[in-house]
Structures are given as C-alpha cells and as structure tokens.
Length: 415
Image (cartoon, rainbow, N blue to C red; front, side):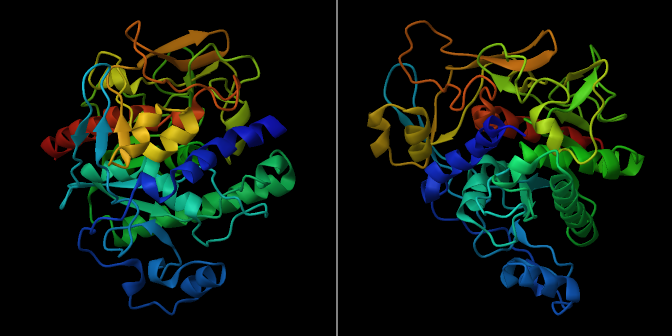
C-alpha cells in the first residue's frame, strides 16, 4: 500500500485526536444492564488471554470480548454529551439538546475505523484515546436510537497499513476479523435477546462489517430479518453496475427509502470527481484491500446510497462536528471556540448527490448551498485521492440518526 493511503486512513485518527475529550465531554449515565465483567465465568481462559493482551478486565466478558461501548459500563463513551450549537447561515446561534434513549427498542453494533497509533502491525486490546474519541465522534449520537455495542479488536494499525498486500498484513486482517466475528457471536448469544440491530462501521470498520455481513448475515434469512440495516460508508461495497444488490452481498440491497429494512447504506464522500488513483469509489482500490475476502471487480461499481436523499429527502446534509475538533481540523470560525457545547451543526450548508463517472461512483458533496454563505466548509484534508473520507459519517450524522429512527419504527411495526 502506498504512503498516501496510510496518510488517508490516518485522517480519522487525526480528527479523533483533535477532538480529545471535548467531542463527548463527560459520559452520561448508561442504560442499566449487566456490565461485561459481571459474567460468572470471569476466570475463563478466553478472558484471561484477552486481559494478557491488554484488555481492561472491567470491560471484558467471559468470552474474552472487550467492549469499548456496552450498556451498563460505568464509563461509556457511546453515551456522551451530544449537546450542539446550531450555527445558521444568518442570525444568532442556538443550543440544541440531544436526547439519549433510556430503553431503546434496538441495538447498534459499531466497528471502529483505523485509529491505532501503536507501532505494531496489529493493535493489542489496550483501549487508546483515539478509539474512545472516535466512538464519541461517530457512534455516540446513535444512542438516541439504540444501545450501542462496540467491541475492541486487533485492528491493523496505521503503521501496519504500510504492509497491506503482503502475507503478514493479510494474516493480520484475518486476525482482526476473527475477533470482530467472535464479538458478534458473543453479542448475539448473550446480549441481543432477539432485538433488531443496526451494524455500523467506517473505513477499516466498514471493511470488517462487509465480511461480517457477507458471512454471518447475508446467507441466512433469520439473520437478515434481525438486521434493521447496515451503515458502512468508506468501505467500497460493490454492486453490479446499475443494480441495487449483488456483488458484495447477494441478499442485502442498497436502501432506497427511509422505511426499508434489511438493507445497506454505503457511500464514499468527495467534493470533486475522484481521480483514477482514488482510494474510495473505485472497485478493488484503496480500502478494498482491507476486506479479508476481496470483492469482485468485473462489471462492478461501488455502492452509493445518499443518506440525505433518504432523510429528509431533499439531499441536504445534517452535519455534526465536534466544536474543538472542527476548529482544529476544518479551520472553523474562531468565534466558535467559545461555544459552550461539545458539538456544532451547520444546517443548509451541504448538499449531496450520488454521481457515477468512469469507474468511480461517489457521493458528491456541494457547499455552500446558498451563494454568499460565509460559513467554513470542509475540504479534503489529505488531497483528492481521499476526498472527504474523514467526514463520511459526521457530515451526515443528523440524517443517519433520523434514518435509524424511521427504520426502527418500520421494524417494530412489522413484528
């Protein structure tokens, strides 16, 4: 893998580092549940092996799975302070309080992207600040919809990405996936209790989710019926050109309405046409190399589902960026530095539309919507090959959270 691709996947980690604790503030109380370490089989060899590999005993269950987020944890970064300052095109800013569900009807299973700065090929299970901050950035707002479960897995590190394509890296990718699959099976066996679930990932997390869905969900009608939806941007899910299903998944189609179930939301964000060397939007390139089982490429295109076309339906994005990380990462207006909220949102600033040209299929981001709008817009921090990958989820957090709410209602009405 090229040095540029390493730089690309460093992007999410950089945004997480910029966020620090300001992105989430202090964690809110969690929904009452049994924490991971309360299992009566806490002395199991699997658990001991995980702890020996750096796992926190208080977050590690008898199956040896360490949970970064799980209902009942005393310090749960997926239940953070999501209060936001609304920054309109004109007029004063306002404060927006975020709700956290106390008894949500579904779960979310979140797989973190590449953020580990450890020097090894694979990360150990010691929870790092970059992982905690990333789930605050990309997963915590979904606590308005669901109980979030986020396992710690031995992700291929930022340093390890330099080995992508080599036998050692392929082994590391398979090792990472084996832990993700074990966490999924542990979740189903001990925590799911028949509830619907949304699978969420980003970047390497989406690559892991693709393999998980392809092997554990797609082939089984019962498993597909449990899946509310999958939200996996930045992972190069593929479909046959012009089709909604096939390619990566044989039975899980692209979502086309806000109430459709058992479907996939996947896209790659760019603010300009991706170059032929782009790491996202083109089958078989870039992030595609992190999927343990390679996707087909012949006759395929990367799936593009526009969250803003599903909710609210007009193609307008509803972004949520952390106030401090936003200032550092996108050079936001300095006046926002004193805003008394961890998040900021800029309504009616970005629009999005799925676009296909040549080998590339991507979500084209246009901003500002209104000429003369002086609010700062995001630009590709790592250059044209990466596009707006860093902001795949945060540019559409409002849309995605509302989408899951609508899908949940549809799921409950059909039970």
